[in-house]
Image (cartoon, rainbow, N blue to C red):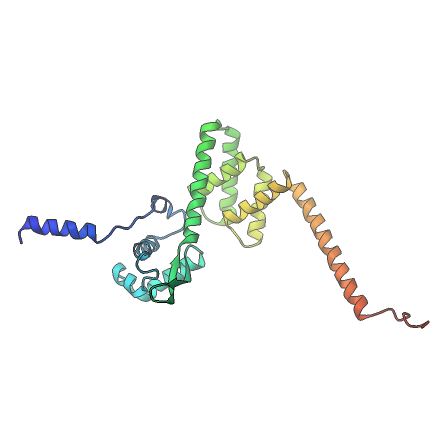
Length: 246
């Protein structure tokens, strides 16, 4: 077989072996998601097999990546803990049985969040002039977040803070939401955002309003507890004079 025929055969084999579509957002933002290069390659390996094999065997992926099966299982366990991938049961209609399968919904949701933030920031950039006071506030908040979280923020996380400020959340509310997240042991921007959105629904604009709501909630909870406690006490200890005059 001459060189031309070898090249032609290889080209045909290359394209007929199949293609794997890797989302550009994944390649662009995998570091923002905290993924290592090996974790990214493993996800690409899973994507390449999902249409044929919903659960590629760890030993197969280990052989492809030049590592051990144990290491692949460790990577899968780490991605599962971070809820970027999940293992589930899927019905195989041809074999009439349940089989293991990877689910990448968590990874897709994380990428969707970053896509949405980018789109909103683009709209805000085109529709609103940059205000220097906001820039100063962003820098100050970034410094506070980095100190509390214990690491430098990513570019997207800094943009998230800018979005909060342009959404009319005050600095003191953002810091209060951060403080509550840290106190709960959750240093996640999605969790902090959920706190701010809840306060937005209630119309809170200051920390004093939030604290007043906390006091009101605590009072209602105590009243509810006392009411239940009193009911149980009365049921267990009826009035000692109840049957005196019967």
